[in-house]
Image (cartoon, rainbow, N blue to C red; front, side, top):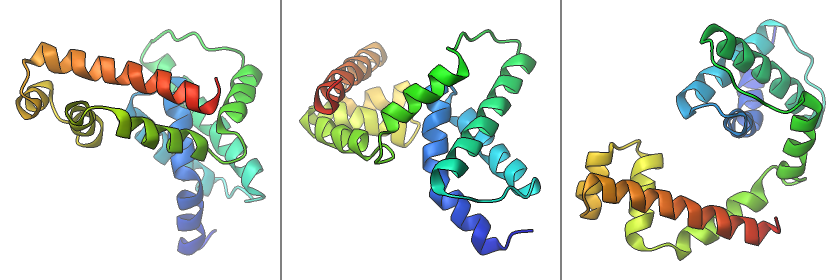
Length: 167
């Protein structure tokens, strides 16, 4: 059995990447957090031998993907995903060798280019999980206007990030 320090280190080293991967697969944020927790518990209970970072990350992704597929089956949801080898290859390409730092840097740059109102709306929605009504009140728009503001801001971010990372 691992010590608490080893377990904490495992989670610290791999949690963010695992959550990004689950979101990449299509998990909603709360589900991704639950599945990541299940993945770490299962890994610890299996007394997985921690190797290098890349091998450990691959093991955790496989375990998390299996938990997600089990959840989809239980929920009777149909999601069409590419073959696992294609998923892994694409994920590795996206993560590059910097574990997503290039994308996070691009996101920070692109966020700063948005209007203050759009930044506030995104912060409230994704940082504080605020309701549409709370967001609309904070940015001074009707609920549908706040929804449109967020949608347009996300489109601008997506385009800007793709340009910055060379997609």
